[in-house]
Amino acid sequence: MMTVEVQGRYLVLREISDQWGEETHTFMSRPALMQWAHNRFPEEDFKGREDEWNELIQSFKQV
View 1 (cartoon, one colour):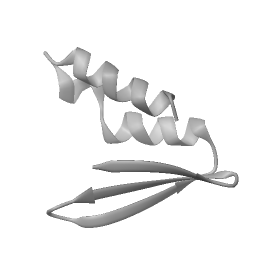
View 2 (spheres, rainbow, N blue to C red; view 1 turned 45 degrees about the horizontal axis):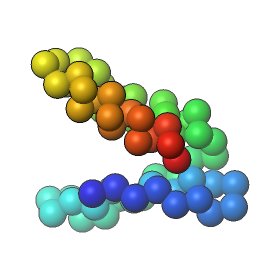
View 3 (cartoon, rainbow, N blue to C red; view 1 turned 45 degrees about the vertical axis):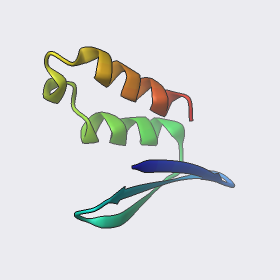
């Protein structure tokens, strides 16, 4: 599960998983968040599931 919260001029993303617990990432801009999203979820990992990848990236773009 991921949540993104706007705190002033920062974007705070929290990744919560059963395996790793909670991991927090702080971004200074939306382009930095998008770069992280593209690195975290490379399109090559979604071969045959391009619609899922597009939906995921669109969710990040709406932040």
